[in-house]
Image (spheres, rainbow, N blue to C red):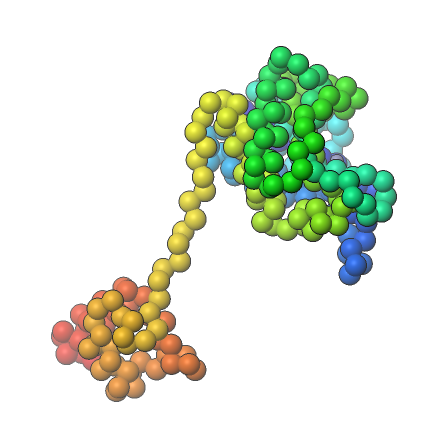
Length: 249
Ligand SMILES: [Zn+2]
């Protein structure tokens, strides 16, 4: 299965940014869209999907180029990632919605409903539902089921703070991938995060080899940091035990 991913707009697109935050900074919509699409591509590929990024350039990519790339690649589905806006300044409009060309008994609506449900489950934001938009080129000119996710409002300060956070961007990407998996009836494969190896700081915390470590501390061979934390892994303790057995300590 080939999934076309579209990070909406570009860095140069006029407007399409948050109002200034209290510290004066703004976030461009494309910065959010691009980050999410980056994570989405990893999510999809881990889950066995092929991907085609229809707007990899940092300059603005036209809508016709985006849709042509997806059509020529023979993509099976098309996903465009956006953040919403209402008016110019900060206001209360909030939540997530997913747009399709035609709401009905069709693939685009089925895909949109599944992705929308996962976005709401993952983020806890207000569910604005699946909506029909016949005026959007990426939904109209694509030959495969196409959806456009509006993943929160840039003009709502609480949601704008989420949109700038890496954690939220990863959440959105995960949710969209879960929706795609559901659409294809595939079990979602989560990212395996490596658990940091446990470290032992005091002689009495050592899983074994306490006598060896105590001897090394007493003789000044092991000092640790300023607080006296030894910061030893299990493997290090084992190596010291072997050296001790050979009377090398
Ligand atoms: Zn947008």
